[in-house]
Length: 81
Image (tube, rainbow, N blue to C red):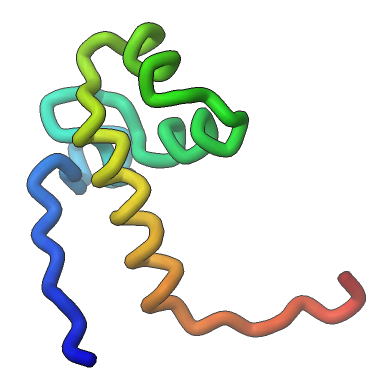
């Protein structure tokens, strides 16, 4: 199965903004914050209510971005856990 190339149009990585952490383009909201909120079981609507400059598409793309990072990462087990 051929993997589809994903173009991230809503994610920006700029060394001058938050020391290069991936953010939602046009904001200073880091992708890691969105992932943290999703992990806390906040709904898209709750996240957008708290951060009204975000759109559902921003949240979706943040999740896809992290999925791609994890998928492409080499992982080594941590012994003793």
